[in-house]
Length: 276
Image 1 (cartoon, one colour):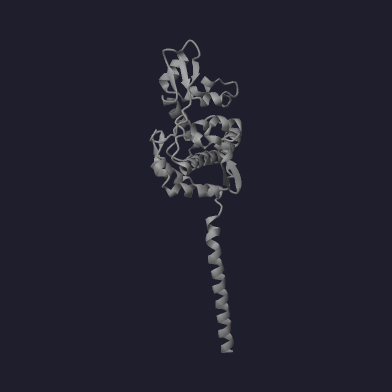
Image 2 (tube, helix red, strand yellow):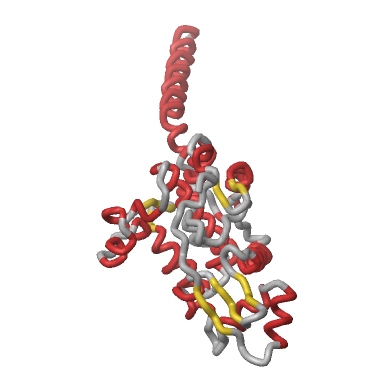
């Protein structure tokens, strides 16, 4: 009987050892790919990356290229299931997706002088005409589904939320874009963050300014390209942006005898890095 018990213990021990070996060989890969549910979504890592590499209205791509945390955050995004997010969390998530993957695109190809170098034949004109801009052709996955930057911007952010303020939050790695915010968008603060982005963008005289003497608004070309996003519900472009303008400019426009003229500025596609 003692021999039988000993054999049984040995057999049980072997079975346990085999089970542990199987679990050890299988678990690491499984844990690495574990999906992140809505309640676990956290963009604090992206905030750390942005705070370390955003310099005013520029991004230090040379240093960012050496920072493994960006890829860690990208992995986090790719394993997040956004299907159950509410509007605030979804808007924050997709803004972060667009900006993080744009940073990834640039650092993978850095040094470049413009994102336009990454279009078909290095040409924005040809890429647009043939539907082969990098925004349409460069693909990535979020929770197993394929996306492009174009899809995130137009189908999701513009198409679903009808919020013109997203244009102040999307940054296409160009000097002409609004400055990249030095923190990630978060569901708890997304409304305040987008309001602040609009105010900062409109107060930046390198991109937008109001000429009091001529009663003329000189605006980013983005307001021209996407004017319909700003002018919904019978609202004019000036009426849409007026609440976000500096107080002195807003007061002057409200007191002017005529609605200000609007001129759109040429867009600067130079890379928004400190070397430019």
